[in-house]
Length: 433
Ligand code: BGC
Image (cartoon, rainbow, N blue to C red):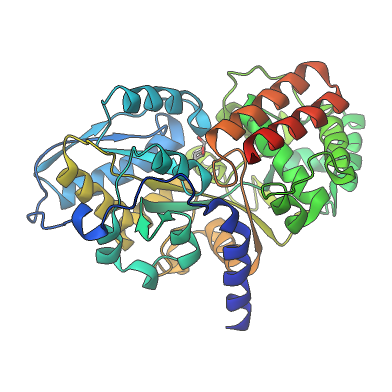
């Protein structure tokens, strides 16, 4: 009990930085926005759902929801509007254009936290309090998570899942080549293991993909070197992106890249994890959507692959959550609410998260229904300190994420550490103004 209370406090505190409500449109009365008197079987009509779960294991996750949606709401026609590209790199640009052009989907995927606040501030989504209340409200969703979806008392999306970003996935057969048997305690120990792997003939100790995967790797190194509190301070007024801690993280990050494959910006995450699966590389830092990729390739937990928190981040859960919205001007708002009710239900969350590698946002889905990885993530989510992800919209707005991504992409080419620090400082100053 005591531990849980502490966690709740830590989680709320960690994420309070993204709960800022300044500049948001005046809250619409929740009661006025989310009447849910849909007929059994669904409101009818097409329900266009926009995600970036277009391929591979992510598509399988979406299909689990689609199947259940068709079963529960046979009156509706599910229209899959997915746009391919990990972390929504392509999807978000298309979505932004559709929203600006008054052509919203009936529901779209948005990350809990700062990213969702972007859509709220732009007045592009409407409140769904009644849907959340009907699903059980804070008795089934962590209040701290609901806080990330709330502005001035209005809740703007329904969370479908929680992912962890600071996970190293590894292939034990490859580690054997360098007789590595223990998890490294910190980034320096991890770099030493990579040197051993290189010496043992493993040409790619670490894999990376395009820019967003590099941003994600970098954020985990920031957490390792600054600690969770120092990391969280980076997103608050008075943040010091030019500190010795950030410089140390940049230096560590540069060394890690020295052990990685050459990536181009279009390289998506499945390629990076597949190199580990195929025994071509030792490590990949990836969100736990990776576990679905291992499952898709029939790989066994503890036999074919292993995982541990990024060294130096043990006890920290680098957090992100997908959630679904009701866009302003959606053509089928009633059908959209059917979708929201489905993804927010215990049954929907079980079906989806089993396929996706994430854990349910709801707290009433039994852990025993899940395989060992997700059980361990559920435990970690309860007991760890929570850090919001940069790359996946929890910590920073889309504009800030884009500035950090530009800096990281530039660094990939230049390897100029001082310039990266200067660019991060400039991005912080600009976006905290
Ligand atoms: C999403 C995940 C997705 C991952 C890779 C993240 O931003 O939250 O659901 O699996 O990107 O595409």
